[in-house]
Length: 130
Figure 1 (cartoon, one colour):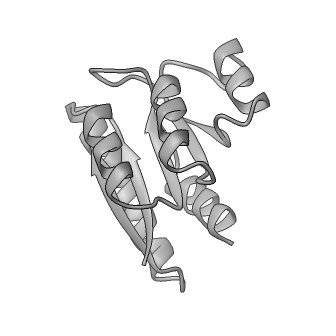
Figure 2: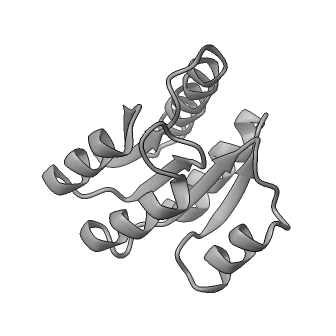
């Protein structure tokens, strides 16, 4: 199936968030999309997964324990150059300069603010995989 990766912090709030992303992706799968989701808690795990398989879509938390999400997006681009990457954050905002620059240069495809709605994630997945 199509592999969607979600990389988030390993904290109680983010565990809930990643569960929400996974739920949203499974609900999308039930709508005729073949979506397999993987999750990683560090950029190192995410990069290892990206070297082992091709992602069709990546959801990256802005704040990771070993690297920030924008830098991780840069590194993911090397192994998955065509995969849409969406930054998820409760720290950054859609209009922050770093986010705007990352979107303008094509580094990321978009931004999802926390807390997010399951429908928002499903919609992004549907559009990105269409």
